[in-house]
Length: 526
Image (cartoon, rainbow, N blue to C red; front, top):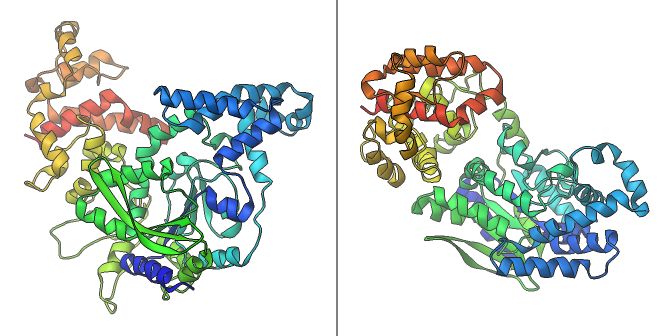
């Protein structure tokens, strides 16, 4: 075992007090399964499906010109986009692919892309080639790896770590409760669900729209666990985009701490250990870089960590330890916190109490914008406001300028609200602050339309059975009874009941959100 590699990895684990997550890229699949890289995959598909030896070169040339002209951002997703129509036609029409159509008749009569199904079939045929390296990696995973993140479509990780739970695509990760222990997050899809594969420009555009939410979900993971990147190029756009999103959320001191826990392993003939810096606007993230072909030393270093609790034990424990108190009082001598924070701060001999709750579903999940809007109305998050401001609200205010409620959480914090909120607060001085220029122009006509009903209850009755939220901002502050507005907002949430899709749609509705922000101003900002 290379002692330099061992020292670097052990230092990161000791600093975090947790076993590492592995961020696995296509380089590791090429090493252990013989799968092609992304460009090789697209080239192979052209060669196998299209009767044109110059097809891939033609698509690549078109994509390169489109990138140079600023028409698209990335070359290979656009190559896949250009290919898809011709590849799909052959897969549907050519006699050569009759067996393919028969095998996938149900999928092909739906909305699935034949090219993605073909990609899934092709990659699914790849098999892990067992070796001393893969055996050591698998052994490390049994007890000394917290979890896996990967942009690979193949099932190499499931084969190496059979006891791990797999989440496929952003939707699984965003809308499921993760334990951050013995789990595989396949953020670009999987061969097990061809439709989930992120391949074309349209797929990447959709992924980019959701990436901020994904990064927020992964934020806890990155700031609490060491992360070892394996099988990626340092220039990989997927890695840079996710790290860039995370860097936006962290102050400089935490950014420096984050860098100590990130280890980027790049393949090279000789072994060296150093540092690499990545720039994101005016922010710089420095991390450790290991170049080596000696991957056994990396896995040996992971297996030689000092004994902590097994990840399986922690996973089981997290499934049983819930909230002890219904309300967190930041002034109390008793601090109620998640198991990670408690175990970090207590003395070894400290006695603890494990409490159970009948409704633990909100514990351990990152707080979303929808959670914040719901909490303004129902007061049900029950977290320290300073925690929400520091870890979430500043980030959301930066991402959604002029679109977040802030007064409930910032009152009483004085100047400790962060740069983004501090800039935002002075813009909210009256009800008019919540009206767009277009809305202001339409107000006289709206007020004439509802003459005689210019109050919260009056608009609710005049608009029934439809929602009055689109028109409430036309009221003056004197016409808005804050208790009536609160009751109306609560009734709307009650009306959607336990239907998560309807509830989410309401909490994302722009008219409802504006009324929640007005309520936040009237109730907590005056």
